Image 1 (cartoon, rainbow, N blue to C red):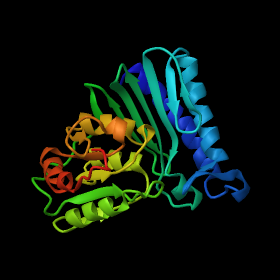
Image 2 (cartoon, one colour):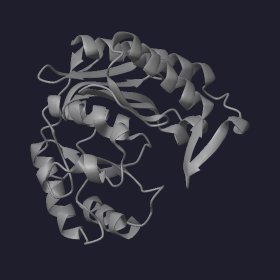
Image 3 (cartoon, rainbow, N blue to C red):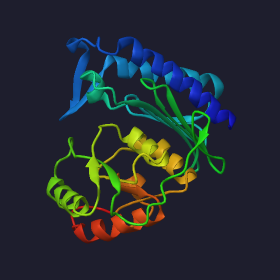
Length: 265
């Protein structure tokens, strides 16, 4: 494991301890709405501070892009942080949330950590070094098509301007698959895909901190992550399709024709 990944693991564990300490105890007065259906609590902020403090001690010159505190400039390395992916779940004591930390160097993802403190599951990846759940190496499923596939997704809840397109995509995929799952944490959805727990995933309008770590996990587990047209613009558009080689191709065949001029791939 790279030193940067080791530091990210340490930071994720610090944040995870905070999340567990306050799980089920968040007072309504500490919750605010950043935008429509997008909530933040003091626990989010505390967890993010714990992560940044840990990273800064080891790498004081690195840039940071974090969900709550925004962007801090630095050198050519940038940490991309979501201290609590699945905040709404967390605030409702729904046990599906995670800490997500990724390191990018000149546009290339180098290290990734997704940590589920409820289950004590630590997903890690180094570029070129594979993806792991705790000490077990991960591989995406080798399913050949959508028949029998279990697909993850996220229903648009902040920006609903493309809801009709999303529902058309849902209809197109639900016909041939074994089912669609929407647990509520994109970071864990990506991790589950890398671990073979689901076969594919798509979502619209994600932010970089939602999926940066997950992208490297899936790629190092042998899967593909692209935008809706099969390209590399997902960091710009937030629209993502992921899966094993054949499931990914099958999903694109269903999703790409549904793109509209108002929905960037």
